[in-house]
Image 1 (cartoon, rainbow over the protein chains, first blue to last red):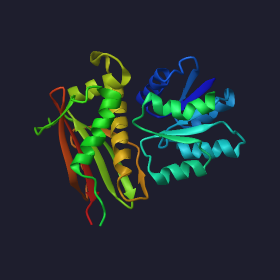
Image 2 (image 1 turned 120 degrees about the horizontal axis):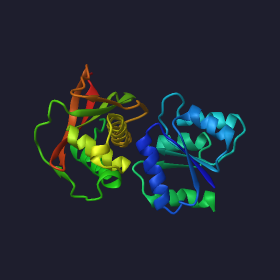
Image 3 (image 1 turned 90 degrees about the horizontal axis):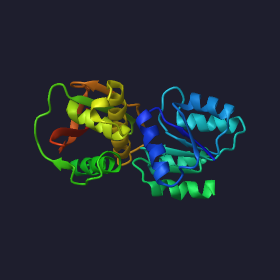
Image 4 (image 1 turned 60 degrees about the vertical axis):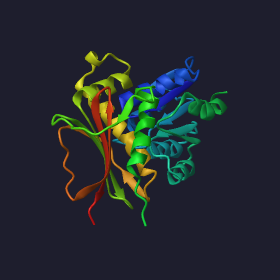
Length: 120
Length: 148
């Protein structure tokens, strides 16, 4: 399985990757993108099986990326990994087509809860 | 009456970020009061909307270097300025995003900015601050609100 991590912070991409390994997903291929526009390029070249995406990024936000993917017909499972996890944000994420929202800071168990059903 | 997160709220959120990603020791952050050096590193995110203001995180250069080293899992001596900016920005973003969740909405959260020294926020006033230390270095977190 191929997991795409989208975040403009290299530190956070590393933390997400490290936490995924701690959660037991070390056999999956982890690929990265630095913002929504870059993620679109990565998806076009080699579609991932799931996208883990920051909300607030330069160039193209996570919500704009999700909208662009759905508009282009991509149905890749998509989840947000964001420091903003208010009920309004969760509602907006789900209404846009996201499967889940993981709040920062997170634990390996947080990823297991949302990814096990997707990657099983 | 609008609820403004307390200084204790700022401390709880900062501790959660710290113990999750920077220092597994819950006793690593110590509540204290002290001086912040002039060459401090400041990370900041801004809120605009139902609540307009900022969340600011300040620490000494050694604390910023150690925080970046912890996030990137590298030796402190190998940390670059780019990594300090990335790390402090992401920490400010995490603390700010969690504080935002406690404030009235809707509001938009900005991308983080990181500077060395004092960041001036014209037209705002500090409404909350928590002073901590980490590895004997100062770490201050504050919430600012646009003056009405």
